[in-house]
Structure formats: structure tokens, C-alpha cells
Length: 486
Image 1 (cartoon, helix red, strand yellow):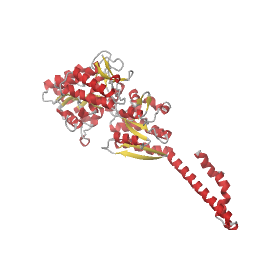
Image 2 (tube, one colour):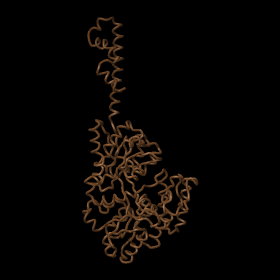
Image 3 (cartoon, one colour):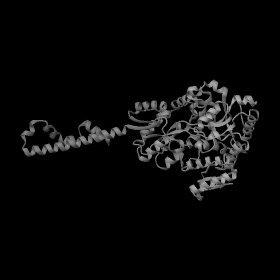
């Protein structure tokens, strides 16, 4: 409709101009003076009316064109080098204007975007911490992408876990931009001193404990032979970096046994053999074998302390994320990769060793890009998504920032393929899954963190800690939403 009106103006065939051309012409000549005064006044009033209407229509026409060709985007400063070139390419390809809101370092992006969405002022394109997708999708904040994804060939290149992580109740609401995996980091100097063969390749939990106990026996001054995040001070770090890494490989998988939610029954799991084994792992680390002190888990900066301890040789083995390769040292002191390889290496986290359990455990998070459900032009927003999420663009940026790729074909890009660390770490994506981020997960995660403190600090039995965990779930969600798996 807008286009037809534009063409009508160009052709001078629209009825507004045809029916009143004489009026307009006479108004700007002296012919009006030859008419009777009443006729002239009537003609001028008619002219004024049509001028107002014409200006209003032209104004509305201009506004509609501007709105259709404007896209608004919010992103965080860490992604600037990825997003800004994509914006320029998008503007060139579409002729659209992009209004940008960049959230600087130090600002809680999840909180900022959440408030914008709730207030109805969020931009068309938004960055989403992947664990928020279910909550935002349920609230109606995110635009479903499946109609676009089925026609987008690139979608087939995404790892299964990267498709699942952006889904809620069978639909997809975002596209992952970066991700991570979890592994066991270990100190090469300490391993050498303790006489432990390298590369280290533990096959089960027994291998992990035996290695840690060897370090404790042969190098008693080591502060923590085996370090795992514990307690509420770590927040999600405890749940994801450690508890899930035990839970996923704890027991022979039957349905969702090795998870926090039974997706088929639509219930949270309050008690199970897998949760029991994960908590028992904690108790062995902190109480039974005293492989990790509790003090580092309550300092003001638990992340900074763990990294300091690791790079300074105070930790033998530590559970952590793939990003640590670039963060164990402060940015200004980061040694060249070859120097780092002499000090710290990593091994996949094995499962417990139970029958039919996947041999490796890993879990992934990361950030995604989504479209606001109130976006003015979803098709235009999707065009930006296509331009942003290309194989080469994303792989080159991921290589530069030393992040794990979300696409299988990233390894075909020269810059990514040249990074030996990334090429090895991406192999864990074959095993990696994602959190049980159904609405209510944040509270579940907090209860998990408290349960790790119950066994590691208070010294409660695993059975008592698990029963306390289950009762908290029942109180929060109701008896009908919590189950026990024998």
C-alpha cells in the first residue's frame, strides 16, 4: 500500500492532486481576484484543508518508510569486534539504518536487557545469555525462529547441543554466537615432580582421585591436589563447572537420570543415584581425602584466586572452563602459547566408569543472538542474523578471542584451524550438553550450591544433604513437581 501511494505521487494521478489541481494553481495566481469574494474564500479554505491533508499523508509516508528501514540492536562490548563489521555489511546490503546500544564492560547485561524487555523498550536484536532463553521465551519476549531456520542451510552446521540450548518446548528462539566446554586442568611441573606420566588421560573417577592422592603424598606442600568449585560464593560456577560435570557421568543413563530435571515427566529431580554420587564426589574431595581446602571458596574473588593458585602451582588438578586458557594469567602478563603449554595442560573429564556411561562429560553455555518478539520488522531482523552468523565471520572472531565454535565447519576456516588448542578443545563438543534451564532453574542451581556446602563444609552425610535438597525443591515448586528416581 505504501509503495502504490508513492507511485501515485510520482505519476501525478492520485485523486488528491487531480481533483484540486485547479485550486492549487489559482491560489498562486491572480485569478482568485477575479472570482466573487465568497467563492474565493471558499476556494482558499478548501486549499488549506488539502494542503494539511497532503502534508499529513506525506509525513506518515516518510515515517513508515523510515520505520521499515531501521533496525535497533543491543550488544555487549566484548562482542564489539564481531558485531560492528556485521552492522556495516548489513547497512550496505539492505540500505537500512541501524540504531546501536552497546552495553559497556562492568554492566550486568542480563539484568539490563531483562529490564528493557519487561518495560517494552528492548531493541529489535538482543544478546541472550543462553540459560535465560527458556524464561524469556515463556514470558513471550523472544521471536520464534523456526520458520527461518528451516530455510537456512547453515543451521545444519550447528552442533546438536547448540541447537538444544536455544530451544524451549520444541521451538528455537536464538542462535548461539560462542560457547565453551569444561575440562580438567593440570599443572605439568607438579605432575613431573610427582612422577605422573603425561599427557594425562584419566579413564574414570578412580583415576582422578588416585592421581590427586599421589600429588598429595609426594608433594605435601601443594595447597590443593584436586580443586573443584564449591558453595554459593561461586554461584553458577559451582553448579556448572563442577556439580554438573559429576552428575552427567555419575550413573548408567536411563532417561534423565543424570540430570536435574526429568523432561518427560516435567518434574525436578529431588533425589537420585546420580545426585547422590555427585555429592559423594564432593564429600571425598573436601572431607574424606582432604584434597581441597574450603578457604579459597570464600575469598572476595573466588575466580581470581583459583586462577592465581593454578598458575602459581598451588593446584595439581582443577575443574574449569575452556576460556581459562586465556585467563589463568592477567591479560597484560599472558605468556605466549608455547610457554603456557609448559606449565598447564588439560584432559577431558571422564565419567564415573559405570557401565554404558559416556566416556567423557562436558557441559556448555555461552551467548546467543535473538530477535525481540516486538521487533518492528522480523524479516529485516532475520536478514541481520544471516549476515552476522556466517562461517568465516564467526570462526575468525572466535579464533581471535580463543573461544569454542558453535559450528562444526569452523574448523575449515584457516584462522581457527591454525589454533591447536581450539582444534583439540572443540572435540569435546561431541559430548557436551547444556543445563536443565527450564523456568525455575536459577533457584534449583542455588539449592545445588547449598547442597555442596552441606557435605563439604558442614560435613553432613550425602543422604542428609540430598534429603535437605529435595525438601527445598518441594517447598519451592510443590510435591507434584518434584520426583525421586531410585
